[in-house]
Length: 136
Image 1 (cartoon, helix red, strand yellow):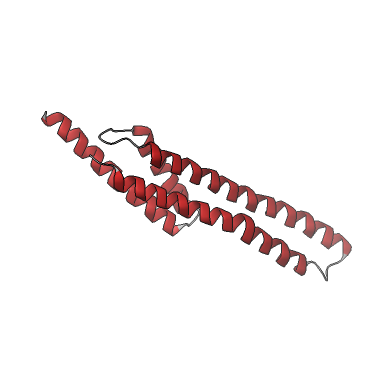
Image 2 (image 1 turned 30 degrees about the horizontal axis):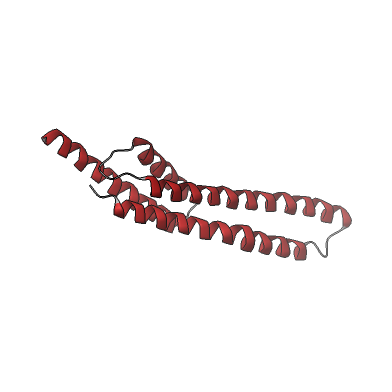
């Protein structure tokens, strides 16, 4: 069986993850720092120090999350390129399922739908490959 559709879905999912990671790292973290700094302008010295520390820590979490998603996007792209036709690769199914669940947990609906479709198509073709091997 040709795995072209799965490759395309995983590639689209990895590109989507890379885009959201870049927006998170450069767009959201910058916006968060700017907005937080503006909110701390009228605060007392103690509140400003505590707020600046909190702002810095949350910004680091945002950037770390973006980097995590970006690394996942690279892994998904590499997996999409390494999928073999007419072969059942159980680790690929597990990875797609785990990454799809992660997409659901972080409320990335577009990513979840892409990886859910990839999981469904990959699983269906696995079943067809198993049945064709049994028929021979």
